[in-house]
Image 1 (cartoon, rainbow, N blue to C red):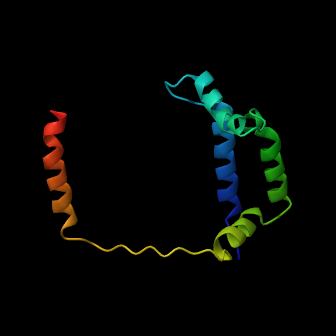
Image 2: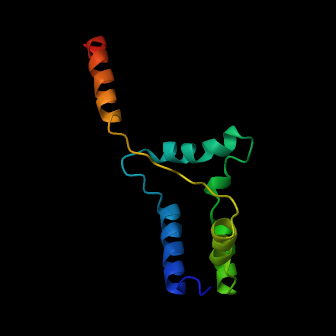
Length: 113
C-alpha cells in the first residue's frame, strides 16, 4: 500500500529515458535496431513509428507520477495481486529420464557423423 520509494521510481524512469535517447546498440547497426523496433507494429497493421515516439508517453507518465497518482501500485494490484487467473505447476523428478535421453542420443549419434 505504501508503494515504491519516489527516488527509486525516478531513477528507473531516468534510466529508461537515457537508454531510449542514447540508443546504444553496441556493435549492432543503429539502423537495424530501429528497424527491428518497428517490425512488430508494422506486422500487425499498427503505426510502425509508434515504438520510436517515447517522448509523449514518458512525459505523461512523469506528470501522472508528479501528481501523486499511484500508477505502478494500481498496475500491480490489478495485474498481479487481484488477478483471478492461476497456474499450478507440478514438477515430478524422474530417475530414468536422464538415462533415456542419453540412450536416445547415443543411438542417433551415428546419424550425425
